[in-house]
Length: 144
Image (cartoon, rainbow, N blue to C red; front, side, top):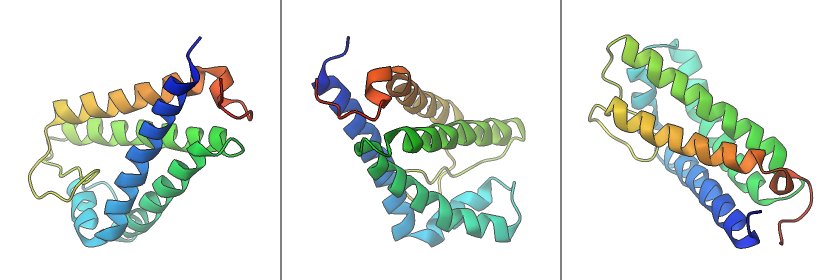
């Protein structure tokens, strides 16, 4: 059984990661829009919607991970987002695109696909670990 401090450490790490990622995109939506456009997958109006919706969702769900009453829902949304990000990266790689991730910092440099997969699968692994630990994802307070 995982001790309480390890659970909280992982929860705080996941929440902090998504909170930071969302805030930097909210802070600089123009740079994030440039990154989204490098994927060349969405029409401009859908990309614009994603530029404002995804970061807000990341921030709200990051906070939701820390609250026992919203933890399960936040976990589902963030896990689905990570799977979506991984699929977007895979599709972009298959299409031979030079994408600018924009996940954690504005960048005009093409991202390394290998690094993106390692990072995204690591984050997904952390989320899955948290999600499949039943006591953690229950509506009870994490205290033991």
